[in-house]
Amino acid sequence: MDIIAKVIRIDLDLYILNVEGTDKIIAAKLRGNIKKKENVLVGDMVRVEQAGEDYMINSVLERNNSLIRPPVSNIDQMIIVVSVGAPVPDYILLDKQIVLCMSKNITPIICVNKIDLAQDDETAKNDIEYIKNVYGKLGIKIVYTSAKQKQGLEELKELLVGKTSAFSGNSGVGKSSITQEILDNAEELLEIGDIGKKSKRGKHTTKSVNLYTLENNTYILDTPGFSSYELYDIEHKDLRKYYIEFEDIHCTYDDCMHVIEKEDVCAIKTKVQDGTIDKGRYERYVYIYEKLKEKYDRKYK
Ligand SMILES: Nc1nc2c(ncn2[C@@H]2O[C@H](COP(=O)(O)OP(=O)(O)OP(=O)(O)O)[C@@H](O)[C@H]2O)c(=O)[nH]1
Ligand SMILES: [Mg+2]
Ligand SMILES: [Zn+2]
Image (cartoon, rainbow, N blue to C red; front, top):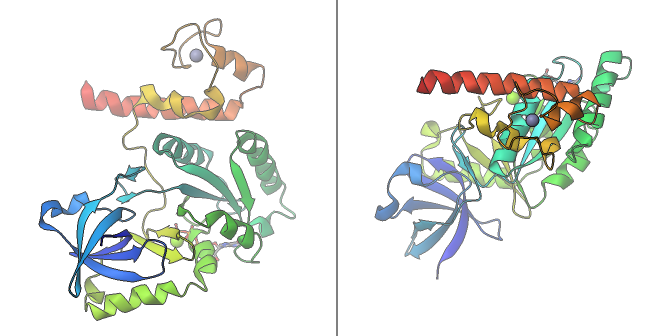
């Protein structure tokens, strides 16, 4: 009888799996036909066969999505952490992360951290307002947390249940502090550690990608060293597809990029003028578009 399991870590040629619907952790090897390493990613659902004491991975189930850096698949949602107070929100990075989510069919959730610093800080209060007005209006879920004062963490935890979530955000916003709080009572962490010891590979463990398992098919991606996710495979011409507020707005020409076109033919520009579309979001769109175009031109010209 085949077992379905999720890859939560890869230790050299050993695949650490969580058996679907249970908290059982097993270690398996790859069947020869899928021997090439890049064919199995952390996050993959795999079909496993038990042969005596050993488990063999026979095949990988179809992926919902996959990323190159970090190499991981089947991410359901991205918790994009921004902090009010040091460091202040980097809105270009925030928009890029939302674009990445939209392009990979990942649900973006914004976590506004360090709200404890906002009390007497006008800039922080303005940022909180701006995020609520602009990103909340796009239908993006926003949670407010203080890892320091343990606020908002229960609400965030509830959003994680039954999902595979990745945390992202620039350095210093509090990703590690938040995940630490959330993982504090996760017993399964110990189990994962035990398997590492049993296989005597602890010292060689690839630390790059790791899924922490919580209860109820809940996984958190931990990628030390990765603070942002790059728009590595998005072309400038496709960028407009990933802006929620551009949906259902039609310009005179179908191939309008909303950058150099004049207002009389670009409906997006008109909406920016009348305030329906946030000016900052639009200006950052143009900035990101130009950057992606430069990259494209360098590659193909
Ligand atoms: N005041 C306040 N400080 C916080 C909060 N959360 C984290 N910090 C502090 O912010 C600093 C950075 O937190 P980290 O959790 O290391 O941030 P990170 O996002 O993991 O940063 P990188 O690992 O560099 O990407 C630390 O000094 C934390 O103690 C918070 O809610 N309030
Ligand atoms: Mg960190
Ligand atoms: Zn246009």
